[in-house]
Amino acid sequence: MKPALSMPAAAPPHAPPVWRRVQHWAVVVLAAVLPIGKFPAEATLVIGLLAWLAGMVVGRRRPTVFKNPLTWLLAAWFLVAACSMHNSSDLHASFRGLWKLLKYFSLYLLVLDTVDSPAALRRVLVGMATGLLVVVGDGCWQAVFGQDLIYRRALAYTFVTVSRVTATFDHPDNLAIYLVSVAPIMLALGLRGERRWRRPLLALVGVTAIVLALSRTRVGLLGLLGALLMLSCWLRHWVPAALAGARAVLQLFITPAAVRAWAATQPTLLHWLTEPERLMYWQAALNMIQAHPVIGVGVNTFVKAYPAFRTAGDHFDTIGPYAHNQYLQLTAELGLVGLAVFLLVLARVFAALQRQLASRQHRPFEAAVSAGIGSGFVGYLITGGLESSFYYLRGSLTFWLLVGLLMAVEGWSSHAAAPKPQ
Image 1 (tube, rainbow, N blue to C red):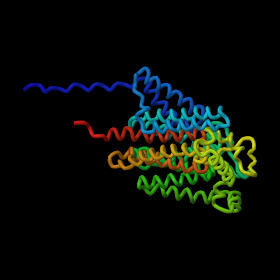
Image 2 (image 1 turned 90 degrees about the vertical axis):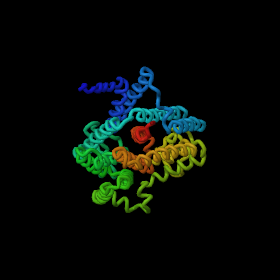
Image 3 (image 1 turned 60 degrees about the horizontal axis):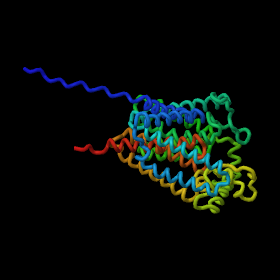
Image 4 (image 1 turned 180 degrees about the vertical axis):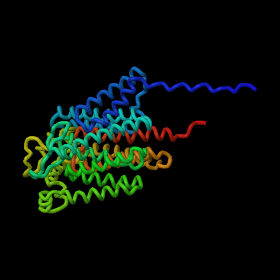
């Protein structure tokens, strides 16, 4: 008998170039350090971008900039921002605003190019879980000992006696924005991810809900409830809805007497939600929109322009506050044209999310992760109704990280699902 022909051994896969490996790990580390501080987040972003550019130059990789569906919308966004400088009261501030946009858009493009497979996505999710664990642990330490472990920052106080946890952030609301955006992702993984990690992730989400409650933020409560209800719907699972209900009940028991007494003096629920100083900020924003409806008062100049558009009785006569509403602030700075571009970006992101959720039977892991990221994204958008989440550095980085992950999953999952040529 003739000896059977043996198949040649498969060639081992080539290791990715060093620049590609640096780029991948920079995004993973960025996901971990983003909630820890501004400097580590920006430093890691710079490293990732340099590695990405080096890979395109040295490795002669074709850039993905012109292959993603948001590129032209981001270009339109930047163009509107540049045109808005015609009405700017502070050109230096507006140039800083353009630089910020380039930084945020670069993060999106970096994530989109880096997260090119389920393995890459898993590594980034591990980074996000690590960052959440650090922040939640720091928040627990601060609640017990009166100051956080990393920065030695004391608890924030309202009504003199009501303590509020801030953890690694400078304000309880900024902490809440991050927790609301990331906790639903970990919950989705705890319910539908690898079995060995389910209990640790569910425990992490439970402690996160407690830390969020100790931050005593209305925006955090509303954002988390909205995110969990959407996650329950998208996963078709009862646990997120039950957690939302438990979180609402917990809020009733932990609300201090001083806060209850203050809330009783407010004439309406709207006044309770807005303190009601936010109504004053929103009116100033509306005055800006009325004065410059097309392209706004100028990118990154809301705070500078505020004194000129404040209402009677407003004491901010030198420098103004943020709008405490990211949609009004964006429209005030970039006009209705800028708002339209922003809404188109949201529409395209949700279209991608809907396609990923519809593919749950074929790619259950990607669909579950997309449901978690999408729910966190919804929570983020809800917080933007009462806070200028989009105008806070780590808040903006969180937004573009979520957008980048959603669009990246759409890119490689749709490519994998495409029929092979015969």
